[in-house]
Length: 201
Image 1 (cartoon, rainbow, N blue to C red):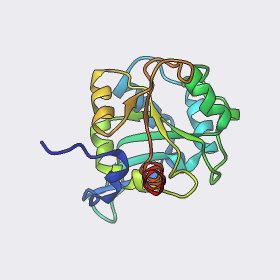
Image 2 (image 1 turned 45 degrees about the vertical axis):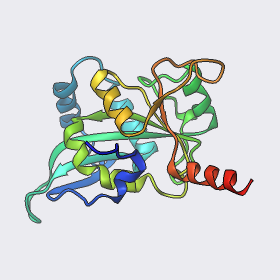
Image 3 (image 1 turned 135 degrees about the vertical axis):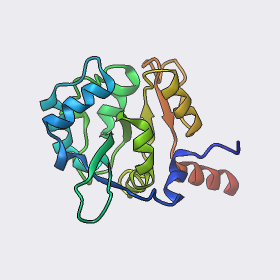
């Protein structure tokens, strides 16, 4: 196996044939919510809460669908949601005061505004979502979010392995990070700029 492909580099791959990435906010309904429960089981955030979050940040909810032909209705395969956090939300995430089951509006940036950080909130059917990750990561290269670090909190060992493979690293416990189990991915744009500054010194 070759070197791991870092998260930002996924956008350079060719898109998967037969798949489409659609705005989840436009499709969110009870059927998708019930399908989610069948997929993941356990406790979920209430339907209305997910709907309200998606309406606040519609550009960060991605539905991956199978498209058999131009005249066929897309078939749901999976979805993933990122949350754009403002400075208060970023601080709350690091301190452990951020509740992913009940996301507070005050921690989110408005659509189109610069985000201080991104939180990878959830992924349902990750193997299917991987088919659409080229388009997803491309959306996360937009100017107002391309420098924001991305955080995730793996829910099991498999999710942790995937996070590590994509370049996410566990945050160091201490004064800055009190949220146990949190992983972070520093964006390529920030790393490149830092390297340039070191080279110029």
